[in-house]
Image (cartoon, rainbow over all chains, first blue to last red; front, side, top):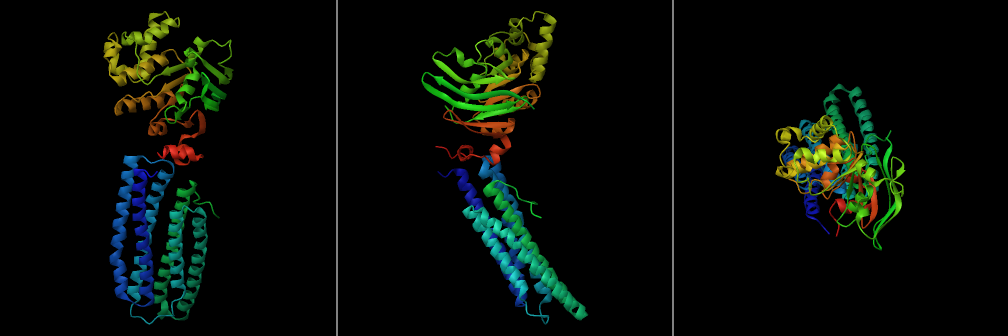
Length: 218
Length: 251
């Protein structure tokens, strides 16, 4: 039996999934704009961020409405609480993608320091984690959400590797500093995206199992 | 905090049919326990077992036991009149006596042997104050209680209950016939009263259970399915049947 409340929750969930699609698009486009030195594509990412911002407000409002009118309990309550928080993480991911797009615009037209390999790799992992965490939510699969959390280390490792490499470039030649700093900002943004996806996975586990695993590791 | 009420394998029969089956639970002193469950699940029957209100129904039978402060209330030597003084009850429909507001409260005191006029007056005032009714009725104590609003009548019944200083208060859907403001007053009163009393409330309103109780017990067709802290029941119940009930997926 599907209740009216469940239909409303499905509707909010579909909006959240729409936000996830937008976030994935933004990460993918911003890193491609950087890699291909495509300022137009970067500009598109900046413009499209408004879609995520608007969806964030819509999702929040719908969650408030459901809380007020339906007083959800148990799994329904956990879903609404999780969505309110995931919503913020997705909006922040959108902002971080615009940071990357801004760096793509700043670095546009400069001779690249080196071919970009690790940064696109970080983006790929981040996107794969995002896809996985939303599959975990759909299938109510807490194990899949836990696997997402453990993948964040791959992103952190790549981030440190990129830092070390870029420090070498800066030490070798002061003319590299502007570009290297730009790439460090990008790497940092991708590392933060990994953290936000980890948050989403933690909220997914709260929704599915009702347990709060934040700040329990290390 | 010690256990005030302990039910031990309590089974209650109307004729040959068990209305509640093998119920074991304990209620801490000064806690509020909410009993929830669909109609006919046995929650009111269980409530009425605690002050042996069911005794007046012919053909009933009780197995197991209920202890209050460690003492069996189904022991044949137990004084049932004393039990009902210790365990007060408030019903769904307010039932003031067709007497004055003052007499509604004084009556219980007099039949319990309080004779001193000054003492009676002071208990009446104290009871009406602790149910937040004093300011509303202090100038018309001699008027008929039937002239009060439904919410005021219900608070008067609670005042009448606490006047004889019970230890436990049983409430059977005390706010189900009241408007939202009166309901809120009753709910706030429950929160205030738990400082001095142990309260068990039957309610069909799950938000009410969530608002007023420390622990919630879910009954279904005579079985106690789950009892847990209220916050846990409404965020992460242990039993799927509880989850289905509180998320409205029953039927």
